[in-house]
Image (cartoon, rainbow, N blue to C red; front, side, top):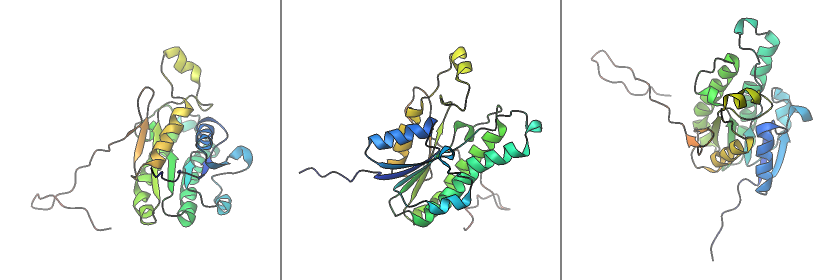
Length: 234
């Protein structure tokens, strides 16, 4: 008789799950039979509030998806409130979430963070949003080894422009530029969640299958003799 692996995930948490990509992730996971909790500011859950994370319980999959845009291209006009708001949602929400989940998740669990293509390339239309997404990707890649010691995988998805309330879809339509649908990003999230690897970033673009981004190596140091020097001890 053929043996089937247990369904993964059976339980899930999705931040920012009330609209856009988050809602699509919730719908997909529920269609797969998972018991899904949505944690959204619209429901009173602020990912930037460290105390709020204290009530979050263990799940097999956590999708740290909540995020906002700065809405200001000109950094000289950026207000303190707007700056703190985007840092809270896009960075604190990920760090506080991972910190809590690292304490309570069981081995075999997974975390997937919604980053952005703006975390891999310069995006001059919103430098502060770009700042946060670069930071998110760096954090995911750097925290992966210590989570792996606990048996927890963490990966990120980096979608291009997605048809959500965060962007003006009309200007893309007028230019004939294809937009991702939230459902395509949700499928990439599930793909990343079910994969065996950790510390990876999955790029999601219209008309393409999700693919792992290959980061280029940087030149290493050389000693006084000109010989290459290995990686420093941790």
